[in-house]
Structure formats: structure tokens, C-alpha cells
Image 1 (cartoon, helix red, strand yellow):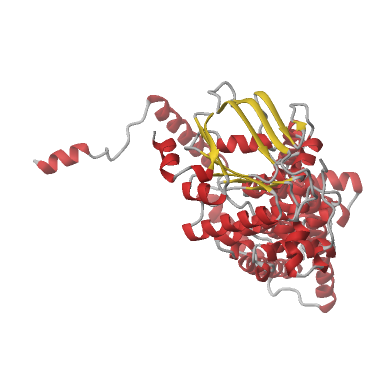
Image 2 (cartoon, rainbow over the protein chains, first blue to last red; image 1 turned 180 degrees about the horizontal axis):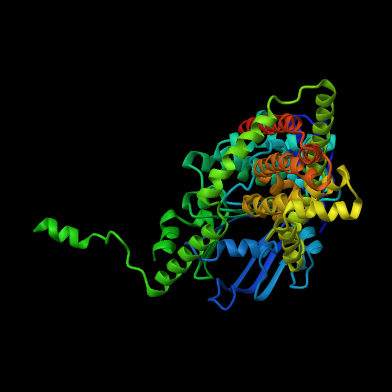
Length: 278
Length: 268
């Protein structure tokens, strides 16, 4: 599997070609991107937050992880990118099995291929939307030039503008992040993930802190990008409607274990609510 | 009756204190009274000093306005200001890496953070006049000793408050950049400093204000600037010269405080 995608310069593309430019390098369709086998995660000597979780996610899938508070959804996502280390079991991402011995550099290389979006957008509020999008380049070689849009190379600025265009915020490029609405800020965070041309989008409750309309807009933007760029999307949510509308597969966690793994078309809101209340 | 019941449930006017707290209070009161009686000026002494103070003020008036002297005062004031500016800027530049190394959860080497914190505390706790004596003894009389003193003083001040501003910076952008695979230095420059910048600029302006005041008195121990001129004036009983210098110092400090206040208000 290729670890990086080679692209045409998005600055020279027409709007219609933008999505193609952001698409990752072609890989064998349906290849397994994430494989978790009997993963256990406990903090200190406490009760395991994840208790024998086994999941595989294939290329091109859109997966919603649902479950009540404390079910282990966020822990699972953080374990996937090495922000958390599994206490037991194996985590394989892009064919590489994560290990406790992995250095910072190896983890950084893994994260290079993942676009992570947090519940809170995590933007630097005093910087412009454009600078925040450019921060997506920070882990790359010469990434220091992405610290601020004023020192970024022209082609990176063009890529950032392309990503902002994709999330329909090109006109806000010069606005400071603290001048954006919650939904706009979250879309800038998506653009920051998008500029990395990831093989995998991971989003931890991206719509949780937004009002329903903004939440739908963010999820729609995410789902559109994932579909058009054929990028795999894994997101957690408390919103059953979002899980059924924007994911093809729904995985439910409860007490650190998987209690449901099904195609969303086979599910109804009532089935999912039973997991929270049952 | 009902009023009585309500009053009974209310907390007592004076909270009861333990025997230990009472003893501590008595000891503290004894220390304060003993200190005042030992070193504070007595009424008789103040009464005797008042005429002498009056005579001194009379000898200071009118302030000296000889153009040659005013020009010398101006030159010394410029030197004082240069000591403050150079010392503060160099001190701030050195403070940044020291603050980074000592800030909890931000430092790239957690094991040595306490060493940098200790260094900053040491710089801060030793008074600037003592640093000035040390540098005058090591690099000789003049502005260089004053500048070095301000550098050390600024590191002690900014090193602590920069580190605190970094520790208080919003954690969410830092987490987001770490998830991207950004290096610690990139997280510092990309997320920590932009968020902590207003607080750091505020601290830097206070440091400059403090440096101007310090650089005025450093001359008293031979570390350059207007203080040296003031000391000469008093040593030679040139009280009219001294009053001119005191007025000049007053104007510089007030103007400096006004400008930094305006800048702070603009940045708030």
C-alpha cells in the first residue's frame, strides 16, 4: 500500500477538478486499513475501557462508532493513531502493527496518513483559517513553513485554499478562527485534515458541540468528501440520525465491548436507541 | 420564636479558632510589634528629621537648568533607556527557550524542567542591585554591567511568567497538532505561542517598565545610566543637580508607564 499520495498542483486546477486533486493515491479497493484484534485498554490499574475489541475496517468504508458515554469510543479512536497504547491485543493500521516500542517518528509517519478531527475543532483561535488549514502540513518535511500562512510556500497556500474551497469557506480564509461560527470552525478543522490527503479520516464526535443544523452541515461535508475522494471515514457520534444517514456501517460499543456491527441500511433509530437505554 | 430559630441556624459572627491558630496569631502579632518598635522611626526622631528634610528640599530648589548639565542628563537618560531596552530584549529572547524547557507538559525534556525552573527562581530571588554589584565586580563599571543585570532580572521575571502562560495555553489545539504528527517544537510555535502571545506580550511590557525603573537605580552601584549621575550629585552635595535628575527620572518613568499601559490596552 502506498504511504503517500502524489498529486497535481491544486493551485492550477479548475474547481471541478478539486476533489480529484485531493483524492489519495489509488490503492487496491477493499483493502483492510484497520485491524484490531482482542484489544484491551485500561488506564492505570482501573477497569478496562476497551475489553477485547476486534474490528476490521476496509478501504472506502464509512463507519459510525456509537455507544453511551464511557463506552470507549474516544479511547478506541485514540488507540488507532497511537495517542493511546493498547494494554493488550494488536492494532494494525495500514499494514503496520503498532507497538509500544514505536518511536515518536514512527507514530508521526502513521499520523501523516490519517486526518483526525476532534469533537472540539482544536483550531488556534488567534490565527487565520488559512494558517489553521496549513497546520495540517506540520508533520511533513519542512513543516515549519506551515506555521503561518505568511511563510508558507505558494503551492501549500494553494492546497490550503483548495481545501477551504471544498468545505465552502474560501471566503473566510483570512478570518481569524475566533471569528468563525462553531460549524465553520469544524469545517476548517476538516479542511486541515483534508490538506493532508489522508487515506483515512477519523473524527471524534465532530458534531457534538454544534447545533443540529450546523451538525448536519459538518457531517454532510465530511460524508461528501469521504465519498468523492474514496477516503475511509470512521467517526463516533451520539446522534443516531447521523450514524444512520452518514455511515454505511454502524458499530456499537457498550462497556468496552462491541455489541452491534451492522450495515446502517438494516438498522432503525429504535434499534440504536436500545443500546443506549437497554 | 421563628426569628430566634432562624438566628440560631445562622453561622456565628466570629468563627471559633483552634488553640494552634490562636498561638500563631499571637506570635505573628508579637513579630509585627517587635519589628515596628525596633526599626520604625520614633516620633521624636521624625520631629527632629522634619526641619532637616525641609532644609534639604530648600537646597534642591530651584532645579539646575544649565544647558550643559541638561545635555549631560539627557545623554545619561538615553544610556539608561538603552540599558533597559537592550537588557529587556536580550532577556526576553533568552527567556523563551528557558520558559519552554521549564513549562510543565510543554517541555521536551520533562526530567530537566525543575533545573530550568530552579535557575529562573534563582535569577528572580537575588535582587537586581546584588546582580549589579556582581557584574560591576566582574565586567567593570559602566553600562555593560547594567545591561547584564537587566538581562538576568528579565530572565527571572519573564522566564516564570512565560512558562505559566505556556502552561495555561489551550490544550485542544496542541492535541490536534500532536495528532497530526507535529514535532514538539511545531506544537510550541503553532499552538502554544499564538495562544499565549497576549499574556507574553503583557509580561514583556511589564518587564520593560520594570527594567526602566531598575536601570535608574543601577547607576548607584556603578552600573551606568542616570543613577550614576544622581549618586555623584548627592556625594558632592549638588542638590539642585539632584532635583533636576529626580524630575527627569520621574518624567521618563511616567511616560514609559503611560506608553506601556496604552500598548497593553490596545492588545487586550
